[in-house]
Length: 309
Image (cartoon, rainbow, N blue to C red; front, side):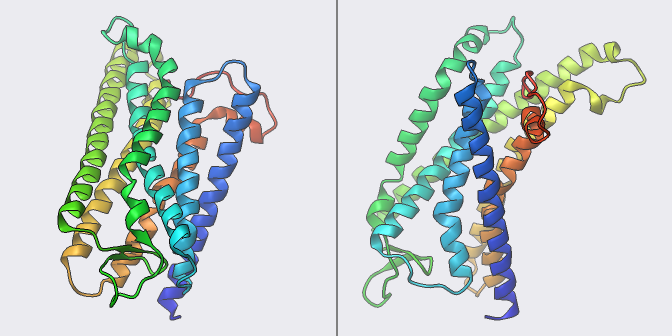
């Protein structure tokens, strides 16, 4: 292995290891909190599902990609490839559904009491578990084709390879079927990205309007950045904006990779590293916005207020 390959392998190893460790710790924290608390917070359920999805993504695809980056090839058979890739595709779809639901939950939660959403606001907490289950089921159904077309490493002279991951391959499928699957998955992702963008824009609008109304109550000597509604806006929008940013980045980089015929190994490596950025960064953002986690590490009493209004 040359220096570039070793550097890429080290970055992948550190990124995946840190991501799995932090997500597992956060998931254990939420399991402990939900099991011991008589009143389950709505956001704990949403974040625990998102953290579980991030953990599965890193375990199912992060570990094989790291092993491949260190020169390992053909270490998975057909069954292992089908299971791991199906888990990855399913949890990736569930992650985007959950992030979208989080933005919509925040938009309804902070909406004015006198708005048309007041009835939905009361019923929304009871819809979290059914919505998460529905998201899991839909993601599993949409990505069923992965179980059919994913196989272990194949000889390109014997089968038509559509995608070669070194440790797994996607074998031939008709052009019509490939087009239908691609369009369906792209429309699903685009729909949820647009929906979470609209919901996040509404969150910003409500918080900005509230900030303007209560500005005189904070006094001229206090910085606007210290106001709770401003902090809440940053915490809510950052997570969604991060997902949208990485989604756009992925779409652009994949378009460049597939349209340019030259060997773009550096661009492919960057695409792979950035592809794991969201599940790695996401738990740090959640921890930063939850005071109970900070209190837990400091051996103090957990804060009782909702950090995400």
